[in-house]
Amino acid sequence: MEAFLIVVLLIALLVIAIIAKGLLIVKQAEVVVIERLGRFDRLLHSGVNIIWPFLEKPRPVVWRYTYVDLDRTKKILEKSVNRIDLRESVYDFPQQSVITRDNVSIEIDALLYFQVTDPKQAVYEIDNLPNAIEKLTQTTLRNVVGELDLDETLTSRDTINSKLKAILDEATDKWGVKINRVELQDIAPPEDIKTAMEKQMRAERDKRAAILVAEGEKRAKVLNAEGERDARIAEAEGVKRFQVLEAEGEAQARINVASAEAEALRLIVDAIREKGDPVNYLVAVRYLETLKTLGDSPNEKIVFLPFEATGVLSSLGGIKEMLKSVETGK
Figure 1 (spheres, rainbow, N blue to C red):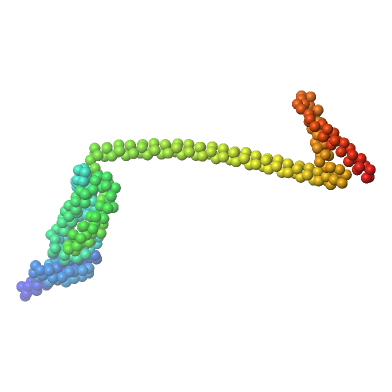
Figure 2: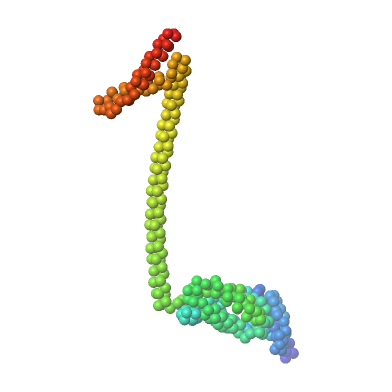
């Protein structure tokens, strides 16, 4: 009886062990590759799954993890796991030496973001997927940077990232991997190159500063010259306008005086036309006015007198006769 109980107990323990070994819980965003008798059978997704113990077992894969040690150095840990993470993963590769087209050796630190899209291909199409991705990234980076000069490498990170992503994505497609992003964290040229670059940068800044100062002085001189020119033009325009207005005023005054004189002459001519010759009258008046102005100043000298004095006297006589006629008419 006791032997029977022991056998039953052993069978129960065996059944429990088999059931426990046959139950497999898969976490969210993970997948397990199941092989039956060494051949691929199926994929187990998140949740509770049942497998046949001893006949089926998960296929182990090598996975890489990157972490920073206490001394702030990067450490890479590789271990064998039986689950494939479907989330986006990041690989922080150690610095590697790359030679540019102008034969400058630089150290580049790169980051790679990738995601497993087909677990079956990731297991069976490539051995040690993380190591293969790292080596492919390093060789591709050497090829891309080797086509660029140092200055182009330092200023063309986006171009390098785009080229790396396109090349790596195409190469890893058959591995069931999608390359999402490639980032260059740091590009470190040698110390002598850094010193030369700093000197060049300082010289360029001094050059730009000198150019800016010269351009500022040139602009100031141009503005001063333009201001002086505009001031002179404005002053000349003012003088010109004043002279024009003054000339127009004098012309208008002369026109007004001439109009008044013409009107006065017209009235005089109309008044004396019936009594005598108006020409004699006008000549005699102008002659008398001229004699008056010549006698007003003691400094003036009479240079000549009209030779035809009889004509002037006849004019004066005509004026006398006209005045008498006018008085008689009254």
